[in-house]
Every structure is written in structure tokens, then in C-alpha cells.
Length: 318
Image (cartoon, rainbow, N blue to C red):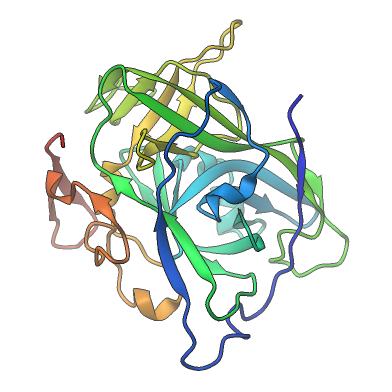
């Protein structure tokens, strides 16, 4: 039986209010190498991700919905699967719903308001510009993953992580701030599944269901894990869970959107705001802000209006 954990937290108006002028916030980059023997199960110690793995939460006037997962890739920048957002985007655009991300750290729940969403038009990827809405103190650390452009080889093991809610929705309290996502506890599980890479589709799997770069992994995955990070054996981020095939034997496979098409996407947002005065891409960020193994595998030419980008990827091997 999966172990349910309740998430609760408090939203603040100024997350840095307790930090004095001249105080320091550290942004750290973490690896998540394999330390699990089982093929798939749930994780009891959520602190291990230190806020890098995120749950994607939508809320309206009455309900909360934990719809998918995401991963932190830069200073207050996350990536999720585009399809996690698409079904609710009209409600967000009309101001009927709000979108947040939540992560667990050793210091407790960390909550983020989603301020900007940038779609990767030709892939199942979306960039999220976040703003911290949980209080932090001087010396606290905000964590992110380390990216690699290396495609795992056929037969290589990878591991998928993601959240799964205990219910389809959770009722909010009758009186709370319209942007407050955590007025009632959300019960959910943190799941993982690992398996071997069985196929590469470096341009597209097909022209209809997955017309973008994916790899096939011989393991199952479940609803809510969509957008969750996929790491290689060294603990570097190689992609995000896009979809899986549900069978009677519950053995998959799962399909992972490779991360490299997102690296040249121009996005807005990020926190603290002074770090992101102009639109940029992860590839163009200072390597100290976003660590990418194999940057040299990517080159790109952006259109004059900046709205499109031609990206060339040369498969990277160590």
C-alpha cells in the first residue's frame, strides 16, 4: 500500500522579508544518482529532493487539483510537460484558476506562484517562471537539477519520479486569499519507476501522438507523474515523463521527452526578478546559474523577431 503524505503550507506576501539588506541566498545544483533497488514503488523520504522535484497545483474558488509534476532547472525556473497545463490554460487566461508549484525540503514545504508559462510549440515541454511565496531566511538554499544533453544509450537504466494525488481534487477553505494554494492539505504520494531504455526517437516517435524527440523506457508510470524528471544513473536530468502505455500487466512502456529542445526556448520569469530583466534561454544563462553537461552539443539560430528558433543537436557522448 502506498504511503500518503499531507502537504500544508503558509503563503507570505514577501518571501524575503526576513532577509536583511546584504543578506545571502544560495542557489545550489544537485545530482540524484540511483540509490534504489526496486523497479518501482513510492518514496517515504521526500526531503531527498530538497525542492527540486515539484508538484503542479491548480486552484479555483472551491477546489485544489494536483495535476502533474515538474523539475527545477534554474534559479526559480522549472520545466513540466506541456499537456499538464494545456487542459487548464483557458481557465488560467480568464482568471478563473491559478497555478502553483510545491516542493518538499528538509526545512518544510516550499511554494511557488507560476508567473510566466512558455510553451515549446513542437514538443511536450513548457517552461515555468516562478516566484517564491514561502518565507525563507538568510543562508537558506534554493536547489535545482543538473542537466545533460547526453542521450542514454539503449540498455542504459534511467529513473522517473513524480507525484500522484490521492484524489482528483481537494476542497479549499471558504475564506482564503485567491492566490493561496494550500488552504487545505493535499494528500499525495511520491512515486518512482526505473527501467532500461529500449528505443531512441531523436526526431519524433510518430507524426501524431509524439512528433518530438523521445526515448522509450521499459517501465510503467502513472497519472500525475507527467512532467516529472527523468535522471540517468549519474543523477543528471535527461528529460521529462511525457506519456505511458497502460496495459493489463502494468509494465509500460513509458515515453520520455528529451530535455534538449527546451534549452534554446526563450522564456520570461524567474526569481529574484532582477536576475531576469530580459527574456533568455537556459543555454544562454551563465553556467553558474544553469549547469548543462554537453552544452557544445547544441547550436541554434533565432529568428529576427525572436519568436522561433532553429536548433541543431549533435548527439553527445562522453
